[in-house]
Length: 288
Image (cartoon, rainbow, N blue to C red):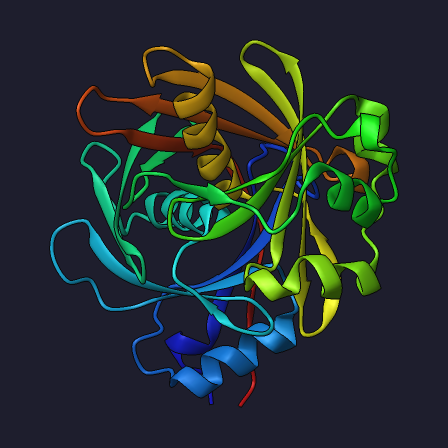
């Protein structure tokens, strides 16, 4: 039986080139799908994330649920950007007005600017010490101590990451997390994501993201939630004004180059915005 809720779209996000960026599946009419089936579908599709869009709650306002193959997430960047682009391209959302995606972390306001969508995080950045230090981070990644710039920090705008700054492109390319050392150094923190970054200029970074998924270490080609955490951290630690812009390139080492734009604005209250492009690459239908 063919129902609207069975149909989905495939996009590549944080890129304008098919088969680059981060893949995403979006079900645009998911109001009748149970939680258990959402998780089963995300596990079956086995992408970084799958989004389920519920019934519109107000003008240009849609609830969304975000699932990895193993769990539901309160917030993720490339699903937010990809879903916004898709809803606009299908004529379900107005590009001229702010679009609100209601995620577990709170409302994510999206605005469109030509071929880019930009969302504002629902929360400002929160920073705390990491369970890693420079020595254990180097050991975890198979690097020398000199290749880790400073002790890592944990930062979050709704999803937390260990931020590890490395000294060079070579260090970034050489990084190979050890599963055994991950269990010793990372898992006890309860935060199973690390975001490696290298300074390439005053406003540019190159990054890689590793996490655990169903007990396995995996790499992600573009991670907007990590980029927002990094931008918020950099704004609080490296700029006098608490403002800034960064272009973050990710996925290069995976052969899926991605480009994420991050802005930090505001005086009394920090506003962190993440922007990027997306391209639709296919659509499908599930059989019950």
